[in-house]
Image (cartoon, rainbow, N blue to C red; front, side, top):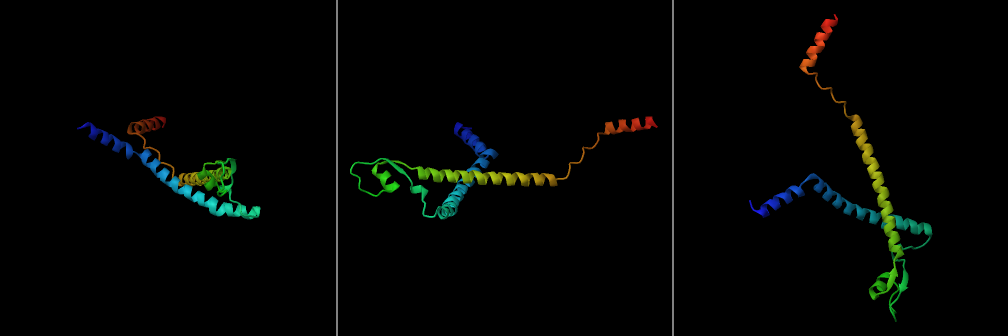
Length: 150
């Protein structure tokens, strides 16, 4: 057996081990779940916040210009200023990401709580395990004891 074949066998054993597959599934689901939370923030939370504030609030385009290139006459948007080389403190983007994180943590909290509740209800429904059968020698000794008592 060559060294390369041994390494390939070791890698295959490592890659199909249960924990590795579980981790891969978790990463894939996490990436998809991240898109759901981004959409929740952008399409549900932010419009409600805009309505409550009474206007169009776009946190992703809120920033402070720390330094601007000399003789800059372009657009005053975050993308244009960043492309021109301005130093921009993008506090709105940070706020949006923080809102995403808080919502994600809150949703994960409730999901874990529901999964734990489902697990406990499933475990409660399981019948109690039957006691192990008494070994023959113990049964014989018990019978002898009972006969001696009589």
